[in-house]
Image (cartoon, rainbow, N blue to C red; front, side, top):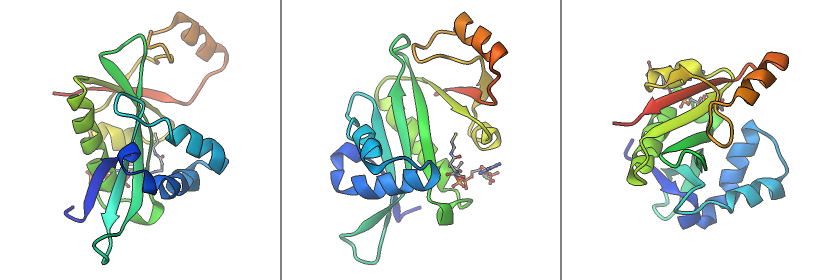
Length: 166
Ligand SMILES: CC(C)(COP(=O)(O)OP(=O)(O)OC[C@H]1O[C@@H](n2cnc3c(N)ncnc32)[C@H](O)[C@@H]1OP(=O)(O)O)[C@@H](O)C(=O)NCCC(=O)NCCS
């Protein structure tokens, strides 16, 4: 993994357009809306992390992955990880795991030890990293009765998962 590094996007702003392209290749959205959301990245959350790969030109690197750590306002000791993506041609080589472990290392530097995420179909990937299924949380971080009644009326295939970082 020597040629790969995980860095904060807002400290490496020259990567913002290529980061946008990697995310949009998986979840298409207008470039301006995506850039606007990426520009919110900061030291104190939300923080976008990018996985970069060195190229032959030592000064150059390319973006091959992204994760975003978002605050949960009512649960300041917890955070939400979203938009985890590895560029298509780099998948199944251990890079998603590498990116998630580096993301968790970053989260711990903030004094946060509980991570939530949601997924439609990647439970197995996250299970292998130690995430376990949990009750849904809403944006404010409560195990919301409102959310439960909503999901009874409008069932979502989304699964929420959680990990306590040691
Ligand atoms: C999910 C994703 C980030 C995984 O990245 P990756 O680099 O392919 O994953 P890794 O190679 O690091 O895999 C780590 C482990 O998870 C397993 N794994 C990876 N993707 C998996 C999948 N889709 N289903 C089941 N297991 C999977 C691997 O086999 C590996 O297992 P091992 O440790 O026993 O060898 C990548 O497939 C991706 O970007 N997908 C599209 C975007 C997406 O769905 N993101 C998740 C949003 S919730």
